[in-house]
Each structure stands twice: as C-alpha cells, then as structure tokens.
Length: 333
Image 1 (cartoon, rainbow, N blue to C red):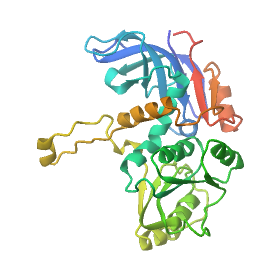
Image 2 (image 1 turned 90 degrees about the vertical axis):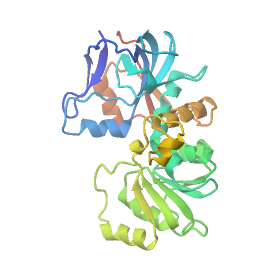
Image 3 (image 1 turned 180 degrees about the vertical axis):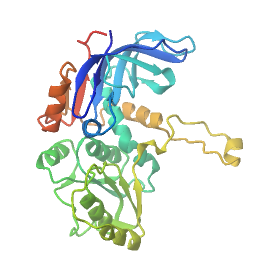
Image 4 (image 1 turned 135 degrees about the horizontal axis):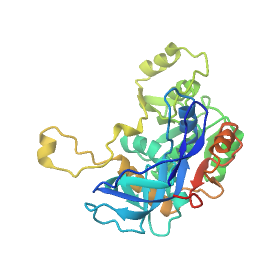
C-alpha cells in the first residue's frame, strides 16, 4: 500500500498508509524516487490550524501507468511534478515535465524552489545589467541570487547569518553583505530591484531605501510573524517619496501553462501568457542540467521513515545544508 507523510494535528508528523483513486484518462502514475522539503513552508503548515495536512513541494517519479488519453509519455520515463511526500505519484501528464537526460532526481526537484523567484525574474521591470539586491540567503534567496546572476543582473546578497554568507560566497556570488549597505558609495539610490526572501520587515524597509526612483521591491519571503517595532509609516514614507512599486512576490500570478500568441485573442483583450509556472520550471531544469546552479555539498538526502525526527531536526536547524531531499526508494508502495 502507498505511504505518505501526514500532519494529523499541530506539530504532529507521521508516515501513514494512503490509497490511490482510479487513473484518469489524462493522468500518469508511478513510484516516487524523491521529494523536496520546503522547510519554512512545511513548518508553517505544521503550526497552522487546519488539519490533516499532506505536505510536499516537488517530486520526481518513474512512470508505471499511462492513461489512455496521454500521448508522448511512456512507462519508465522520469518526470518532475509538484508532488507531495508520497511513495506513489499521480498527476495530469500536462502538469509534469521530463527530466533532462542524465539528470539526477535529487537535483531535478530543486527546480521547484527555483520557481518561487522565477516568477519575479519573468515579471520585473528591471533589466539585465541593473543592480539587484536579494535579502535573505536561505534556500529560496540563494536560488534567487543565482537566477538573477544567470540573467545578467548585478547581484548583491544581504544576510546577517555568517554561515549563509559563507555558503553564498563559496557558491560564486561575488557581493555578499552582512547588513544592508546603506552607507555604500555606489549602491544607494541606484538599485533597480529588491528581491526580499527573508520575511523580515526590517529588510523590506531598508531595501526600499536602496532603490532608485521607480524601483521595485518584491516580497517573496513569507512574513510569518512580526519581528520588529517598525511602524507602517517608516515603510510608507520611503515607498511614497521614492515612487517605489512594492508588490507581492506571489509566484502564482502567472498561469500554470503558457499559451501561444494569437492575434484574434490579443485584439479581444485576452492575455496570451507567454510566461508560465511550468515554463519557469522547464527553464530551471535546463539551467540545473547545464550546471549553472552550484549545488555541491548543499543537498542533504534523508529517508521519510521517521518524519517526526526529520521535522524536529529542521526546526532545531540541525541540518546545515539548505536543500533537503527525501529518498523514497526504500519505502514500499
């Protein structure tokens, strides 16, 4: 019988049996090879109010069954999906992607976290060559910094944690700071974009002070709780007088799948959506396959057999690596 990680109640974690519905005509199904843990998000869910929760962020699975309406996918293929922590994956084939040849599954699932800031990369008014500051060098911020570096931006990373700064520097990010460089001779007033990945209101306010007029501050980090006594006026003053655009970094502002350009729909006022969530995932998988994201020594592989111990280690920050992947190969399905 398939197994899944389940949060039955607040701060309660278990591996439980689960069942599969009959395969729909447009779906594919197969044994899970690995899944990706989104640390902050999943701990946030575990401290929420609505249960049970079936967590999970991304999965790679080997296709065993193919619905009769599916074309272009064969049994044995490896596919990426936004799947839960579960020993068997079932997804609409259109909402999965093939792995590039030779890519390790534990590398491919990182594409999911890249997608969080990929939306900002695809929607920002900032252009390659512009200065960009990424605040917070956790998993999402680390990847955001590299995405914008690949895109040709001048990236500065700000994080007070020395371990995260060392990790960022060793990964090849050239400009890493412990605090916002408000007294820098070059950056203040010239930054085009703040990519805020910490969820800290102080980082938002100080980041906005770095922006040029008509710059953007995009909030990707979740503000799980109040961390300072900063007033709304402290932020609104700099936003208003700096002509700053302050907006959510909500990744779902893009459609799941892109659409081809059609003149008649454009003239009728429809959005043809050339960018999409899965377009971002596809780009992320390609950049991972090309080795553009340095991941050596940054991925911890665990098994899902003891979820309570896993999430206790995450909460206590006993796992040094920023990316945690669960290996499901030893779990009966």
